[in-house]
Image (cartoon, rainbow, N blue to C red; front, side, top):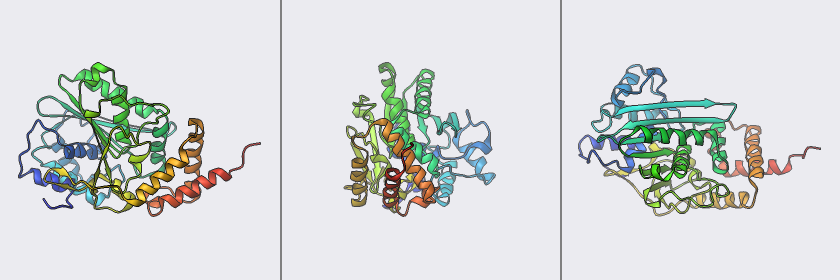
Length: 338
């Protein structure tokens, strides 16, 4: 496998390389987390079916649709490779849930896969490309949400139903949901978690969680070189592995752009200078501000995005720092109610 390959070529590599069936690699966790973005609705009920059969049905119907920010042109071959992959296709989907509540600004989706030996992998979906969905990314960084509570209830239900152990993971907001759920598990249920995979997810607000107590040895965090989302209230007690990406700028957030070689992620030495600069600026902008004020700032930021004509991540991607600066300036200049 050449450097520069991704999850799709990882799946192709697996067809000719034997990995221990009972070992779940980090790229395996990436596969499960990326799968959460697949729109399974054309297949109806999928619980109890094999992953391969569902993917083959969607391919036959020409119904491959990503619910995330990833490139659809890259997502299709990823699902096609999964449909007949000898490691993943036989796995049974035990549970899949998707809840969208626009009024409550909640977007939650989770899936559970039965692994060889009886363990389970629980994965949570991140955000879509809408800035409404991305606003929740910022909200989860400083406040508890119904989506986080749903994730906690989901993990606890799976642990109670499982005779083996569980892995918990997710990408973007899904990583935040995984972190929140594992942090709030009671001790006896924490012991049932083998590993927490956080793929570029925002952290938990230190005002609400001054100290994270989930065992460090069980946490695996990964961020791309150009990272924004994973550095929002970054949980520094869980050091992140920096991963090389074939994408540019904010689009490195896409899991399908992360590089994998010989069954492992390709590590980078450090984050990009622009990413560091953005992170320092965001820290300065939000430090020392009350939770209520942060909520107003986020409302102001996304109101400004709307006024600037931004509706999707594609609109914002070419100049995120400029857009954020204008947004904060707009927030400061808004007239106070009389």
